[in-house]
Image (cartoon, rainbow, N blue to C red):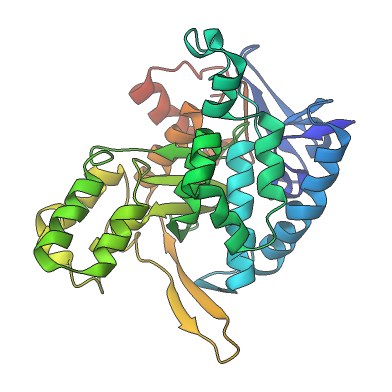
Length: 343
């Protein structure tokens, strides 16, 4: 079976006239291809995993993407179940590309198998554990202390995404497009990555605020992850630390020295970008999350595309060359990567 590590339903949102421009970095070539033949490999997953990916997350997320996310212009409102689907999809996206980075590490590769599995987990096992979670409660069980001792890799992926908030961004105004890479996402840990927890604890001690103590327990070195879902829309999974800087935050003045430099902390954007969803408690016990869709500047897109390409292993793709050329020029200049075969 030909298995896609980037699902076809997503790739169709990166097409123009039914075709996607597919770049092979190693062989330095670009081809217009259909979605059936890109970001895939025969026998990449066992048939059972392929079946479960389709039935336990891809079907649900494709419905959410096509009926709510991709068609929205200014804001998106979703319920608790849909928020869980969104986060489950992001966790699976972060896990499903088998990069074998850690397995090939010269130190880790020499470790006993049991110790190696404890550190990074089994590739298919990690995917199955997430796929089998039916709700938020079950997903949160994967990041209790006992699970951390069994699988640090899975623990960190799930904690970074479940203990975060969701931001939606678009690129319509600047008329630039996102790349889609074989990893399907990227991550960023900036200048405050290690200091965030200490800063939270410092403010919590000064205010004796239980909310801040709770936030401190949820913070990791992760600042945000980026998941392009169409050529001009992406989900940003933001560390809860940045809730302190939103316009409704009562703690913003205490960190005013950072509020004015949020662009340098994140590498892009401004304070308006990091607003968290508005949450409404429903009479039936459910919750509604309303997310304003934020427009990015050209420089924002250049930076985020460079992050996407920094984790790319073999292939990336795009819809229209004219809408990614400036990103590639930025990447070549900032990262010293030769992309002349695309340009």
